[in-house]
Structures are given as C-alpha cells and as structure tokens.
Image 1 (spheres, helix red, strand yellow):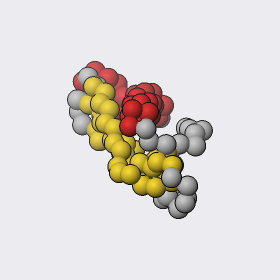
Image 2 (cartoon, rainbow, N blue to C red; image 1 turned 30 degrees about the vertical axis):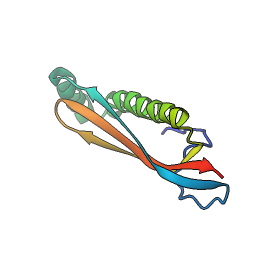
Image 3 (tube, rainbow, N blue to C red; image 1 turned 120 degrees about the horizontal axis):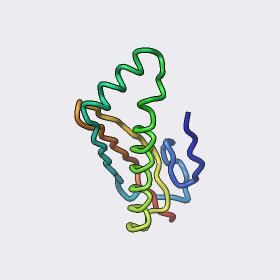
Image 4 (spheres, rainbow, N blue to C red; image 1 turned 90 degrees about the horizontal axis):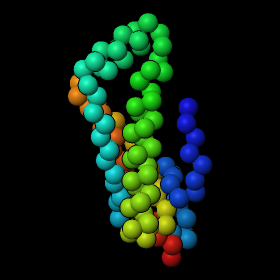
Length: 106
C-alpha cells in the first residue's frame, strides 16, 4: 500500500468555493520491460512472491506524479481534484496515465 501525503492532489471532486476549475491536467510515463524481466516476473509471481513486479509500478507512479507536480508549478495550478492513475501493460512496456481537474485559487 502507498500513501501520498499532500494537499494539492485529490481524487475528490471540487466542492470548494476557494478553487475554480481551470482545465484538465495529464501526465504519461512509460517504463520498458524486457523479455527476461517479463518472464522472471511471471515466474516469481507464479510461485507466490507478488512483490517482484511492484517495484516497477512504484517507480512509474512516482515518475508520473513528479511530472504532474512539475506541470502544476509551470502552469501555476494550485491543486488537482478527481485525480486518477491508469496503467496499460503490454509485453514490452508499462504506461501510467495520470489525469485530474486542474484548480486555481479564486
């Protein structure tokens, strides 16, 4: 389990009168996985050691959130509501797509 302690990103809709919606913010991060790692992950997970593949997801999630926070600074966005991360996995890479409603203080 991962806990992100921050008050600038939220999965809640914006009900705060202190913020106004100003658009949608997105970030995409990609990590390549080679055939050997893919095989080893399936093998190790098959015998009950689920944590083997979690490290690549943690790295990917951290990179995607770091990217979105950089974009927030660049675009002067104060917060994000309805934040989501979705993963797409195929044999060669894993993609993390982050998105949410960009908010600025009124």
